Length: 317
Ligand SMILES: Nc1ncnc2c1ncn2[C@@H]1O[C@H](COP(=O)(O)OP(=O)(O)O)[C@@H](O)[C@H]1O
Ligand SMILES: [Mg+2]
Image 1 (spheres, helix red, strand yellow):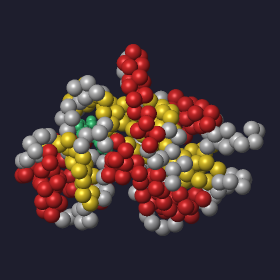
Image 2: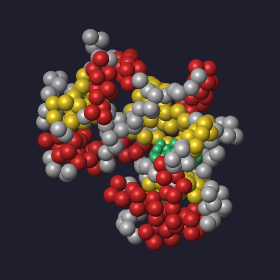
Image 3: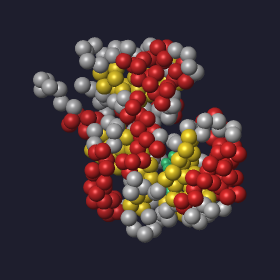
């Protein structure tokens, strides 16, 4: 069955796609996928998930039609409400709410990537305003890193653009610095803060340059979108030859990729100075941005092609 890609409607005109996704919408349609619009506001404001999906026409099949959301990150509760509301329109999102959580929160999928991703510890933070308490727990949690450098983020996102004040900690045994960085992260995340704190060993990555404003190292990183266990799109911003080298390495991660409990997700890789490629993080493919230089036409073309090659109707029609 043809995949329906759902985008956020513009809050100013619910019949049009939100500006931020206009290119993707056009390219998905041009690739031969169905497209639809959802009104995110009622969903996010906790009002009516039904309201969010009411403009979608129901695919008229006995089975729910397959659907994929492309848009901003959703909290797992909102994703679940969207998933359920869409079922009443006879559409089923590609990832169940459990799938979504699995790659959205780092601690959920960490066991799948442990060993090929920086060593990580975490703890939940129930009250993000209890800054002193979070700082004390952090000091305890990072003892295992000794005096090594680490980074801190929440279960979903970092403040990588505030690298030196809210992300990078040069020495994990520097208690003052740990507390101060945690405080700043909590402050900057504010209401967007997700679930808890994650501390990760900092790995020297092959550097391209330093971000001129934030001082964040810009390194060699690649985002791979995976559909049903197969890489469907590999982001690339390098010379052709280097891409081929990466594609060979990718094969070494096949078993890990297949073990991830999600039909559509991203896996971000970075090249370490020591040589090996490591996994930085996983994410739900529906809410992961296309890397800057990705032509959306290419992305949706590949997605359509791979969807068609694996989703053969049982009766062959
Ligand atoms: N453990 C690490 N070692 C070295 N650099 C890292 C590490 N974790 C993250 N980074 C750098 O910080 C950036 C943001 O980290 P990431 O975990 O991807 O957070 P976000 O969810 O905000 O994208 C990465 O793209 C990478 O450049
Ligand atoms: Mg990232």
